[in-house]
Image (tube, rainbow over all chains, first blue to last red; front, side, top):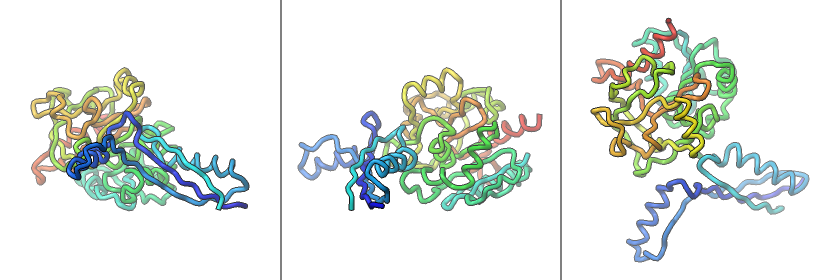
Length: 84
Length: 230
């Protein structure tokens, strides 16, 4: 058994309004950084998973993302895996 | 009718709906703890409002995997009646029992005030007894109630008459100004294609007694029970 570290990003889909990102984009102006546009805010999730190989680990992380960590109606996700 | 009200850690409208069903509507109610595996013979399941599991990850995302929800999902698959109010609606969308999702309110604020809504279809248990011209004044209390569905799902909802309620103004006009949270087409509640699962964001259980100064919510409970007793 190997242990893999998954680093997962969950982001609101492009077509979906991201009120947090919009508010932060607005505050950039107050910082004098009006060059910064289109802030979008999602989640970063890290987790450890035990599996025989990377393919199995990847399939299980994918299942976790689809069923719980992301809601595919409003969010998209991607992740990287590294062996610990 | 025997109602089952599911209680999750973080539910906070459970006692309100139990009170209304039991003491105002005179119905039998059983409390169903989220770890239970038995619906105790309830004929109508209610998922109450609140902040189940602290709204961690996403509203309703964790509650959807509670043991009792596996029973609720099976019950609904067999045609059992299930209704979610506010967080209960969020849980039903997360569970895939209702289409769409509830996003953060477009104004980035937690909304806690009375709004108006109109019943949109005579063809559902929760709306069939409601005058479609009547604007019901009902309390709203949520941060994530902005109803979203992709274009295909939205079309199917309209084509199949699955929209239960839309937000409107006091005079009953369905306008963008009367849309409190940015919901697509002012949608406040929907039913599934089988028409046995219902979800909406407003809280009729907070407006069902003269004591609280507003009884508009009674129309929904009366609609449910008039059919049940028919």
